[in-house]
Image 1: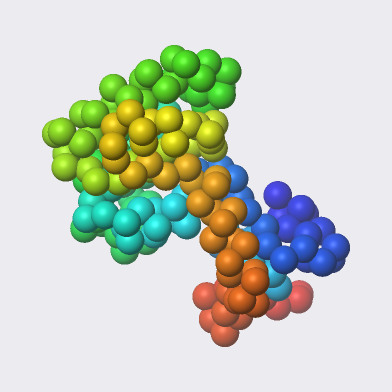
Image 2: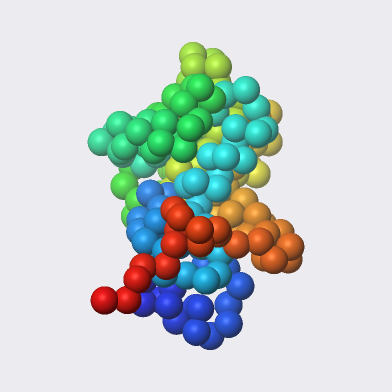
Length: 176
């Protein structure tokens, strides 16, 4: 992935989006990049916190729940987290079986709203891209598709010429 980030810099791209909800390598990618690098998890969670009092992340598998909770706290958004709930589906299943996935999202999302007080739902996997508007209509709650949201945020930031500070946190590594 870091090779692709370097290539995007060399070829004059404005932004790189890491389209995996775990944002793998995000910090390292920002360090080696002169252009903006956004992860779909970080971006969509910040947006979710702005759109409602509390949000829920829907993640494919139960073993991902503790990692998602830790990620939210690491972003300073712990107070806004209503819950992280698992669908019990693999990433491959979320992409390959849209109707089953949407039905499962509806069931889990209803519980998040009714039991956890979620006001915003975040689809916590790129494999769920394209499902948000249908789920939102059926539940009457804000549902974030992290791929779409991150793409639109990336467009706006790039248009404004904003990028990551290189002063400290994302400083370019020194050449050895």
